Every structure is written in structure tokens, then in C-alpha cells.
Image (cartoon, rainbow, N blue to C red):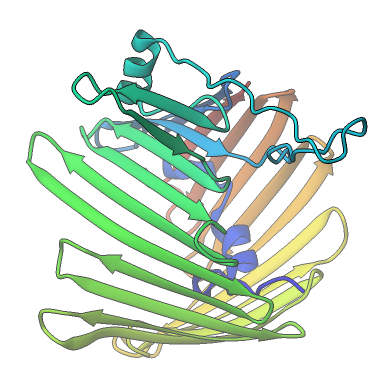
Length: 350
């Protein structure tokens, strides 16, 4: 039995149908993905907004995946049952390679033995480093001159526990940030904790309980300096592969939304979402969207809201690794005004 969805993903199916793969939000966007022979993946993103400067980022990600090969066990020789094979001679590491390993912080092999001889006492000091699988390192540099680093430890500390350490540094503003995120998954529980270590400090918690498709979740925020609860939300939902429904109460139980998603068949998906803000008035916002898969390599999407704004999108796989997305939005109540938007997206993956 898999773990239930996170609190922010209780209505993920409907939210993705309503918001994802609509390309009119930016005039043009470009994304290039590649993977080096050593397993490091690179992701370059660029986005040109309808108004404002061009934003982009360069991201590198390394995942330490398990190899499935453990250390070899010693076997007793058949010819001499009571005699163990001799230990292999210690591996000597060249001095220049040793300095490079320390400078780069990279360990190419599964086990590394470093032997350092002391000039004074002539004693040997042996250090052994054994990397464990489940570690992911991501570093990004954005056009805002921000350096983001993310370190993930999945199922490394404890089973079902994922820890994330996020840091951000902006040299121009001398701004620093550090966060710690914890994700804990069990067959009927998905709990998360987010700690902002420098600003506040503050903490956000959420948890979801699931049983046979039914989901119940709650979220809360706490400011350490103010010693006060900053936010709280709640949600209930029901999710199966064919359809899902969710009701959420956010912004301190003042904004209520109900969403529904239905996979009609292999080609057609439909969904809707209604939102009511108890502080602004009695009006209810409504969005309806649908997705139709034309063939295995292309699909089209359409949506419209209660304000008369309609959006269309088309996604096609031109060739393996090259994807084109086209989108447009129209204000159907003001067709003679320049309120319409058109956008395009290119994704290259090697």
C-alpha cells in the first residue's frame, strides 16, 4: 500500500488539469535537459514574460543511486577449510589525486581508503568513507544572481523519511537563506515539516491520513519569535485512478474550494474547480477544463472561467526529445481590447 498524497497534492489532479501545460502565461519559454555520462543532469530554463525582464536558471543535479552490489564477503577456501585468504594489500592513492578528491569533494568509488603517514611519529592514519545511496545534490544559478543548493537524503536516515536542506545566497544583496524540510511517508500517513532557520525562525507542518481512497489533512504554521500560530488549513478528499474530488479550506479557513477530476477514457479528461472567499463577498469563482489526447504524441487542452477568460493549449512531441507547446488566452467579453495573450514553449531533452 502506497502512502497518501501530500497536503498540497490532495487536489493535484484537478489543479494540474486547470493550470499545467497552458503556455500563454509567458511569451516564450525554453528548457534544455541533458545528462552527463557520470549521471549528472543539467537543466537550463529561460522564460520571456509578456511584461518584464527575461528570467532563467541553470541547474545541475546529481543522484547517488544504489548499484545493487554490496561488499564482497570473504569465503573460506575449499582446499583449506580453516585457512582464510590473505587480506589484499592496501591501495595507495597518489598525492595529487588525494588533493583533488579533497578539493572537489567527490568520491568516485564505493569505498575509499586514504592512508596518511605522519612525518613525526611515522604512524598511519586510515580514514574510510562509505557513501550511502539515496543522496541527491542540486545546485542552481538564476539570472537574479541567486545561488540555490538543495541536498536530499531519501530513506537514508530512517525508512520512509526524506530530509532536504535548502540554502540560498545572493552576493549582490548579501542575502542568505537556509531551510530544512522533512517528509515522512507510511502506508496510511504522509507528514511534512518545513523549517525556515534564518527568517523568523518559523515552522510549517501538515499531515494527511488516507484509507481506501479517502484523505483527511490539516496544515499549520508557527512563528517562533512571536510564539503564535500564523496559519491553518484543512482538506478532505477522495481519490482513485479514474476520478478524484477534494474540498479545501485555506487562508485560516476563509477561502474554500471544491475541485473534481474525471478521467473519462484514455483520450479525454475533464475537471472543474469552484472557489469562494468569505472575506471578499458572495461571488464564487468557477473554472472548467478539459484535455483531449489526439494521438500518442500530442494533446490539446481548453479551459474557461466565470470571468469569460478562455485558454487553449497544444502540445506535440516533434521527435524524441523535442517538445513544442503553443498556447493562447482570450477575454471573450472584451474581444476588441488588447487583453489577449499568446505564448510558445520549447523543450529539448538529450
